[in-house]
Image 1 (cartoon, rainbow, N blue to C red):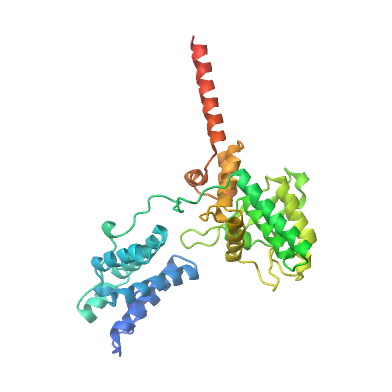
Image 2: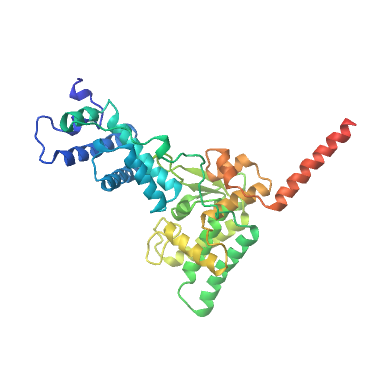
Length: 371
């Protein structure tokens, strides 16, 4: 046995006091396992605290479901839980896989010889933990994008109808003398920003007023030539990814400049960094953006499957249709792989017909040259 000082963070020998009788040994060992797993993730793997807490809560949920401790779990328990998640809870496939992934990683930890939990359980309870997640009882990760089939890019006409309707709500509030004019203007600008810069809801909600920068290649856009997205999607527990997004739609730059110059100051709180603030002085949350989008979508009779994220899909699709370099679009929206950008793209029939015609014409030219 190695000395205690050489034990890795999260090992059983560091989490349990040997030679001390435990009043409730099963509960104590379970809590020690979870505590050690937290140290292993945060210390050795440097994962974010909220990621670690989320995984721990999933393990506790599985403990509650099985009514058994981890050293008594079996593959059958995972099989039954997975069936419940699918048939009773009706969770999304990506959610189910994240639950199963948390259990798999926890089992990897408590069965690893480096952390000695198997030896500890064998000595105390006469049995030891095993890996219960197998290919036949868990969901495989086959594609990167798993949104519902109803999710799609909005057409250009639908985008225009959405933005026009949002603008009409501002005019309507002013005409009727109602209070909601400022918030309606703010929300109309938020939707335009999500589309024009291809943002996720969370990325948009966490923008600050000082995230805009000049682009020397586009001096006509002033200080709104580039957008610094600081809260990009995390990957495997890492910190939020940052990226710089070039402004490619001048009409949207005009909308942002007008909002920051004429509307944002009327909310007060000039020292608040947030670009989008509420009437109560808080930062606009992504859930509130989704709710406003849903209200406008339903008023226009659009598909109920559409969400603000579909505006991001629309940005990608319309840029590709306009002939923008796919690699540039990929960098703009922060996709690691080109295949992900392709999944976001739903080009229209006009684009497909034009591309087909171009391909056929090129083929005819080649045939003529051969003759």
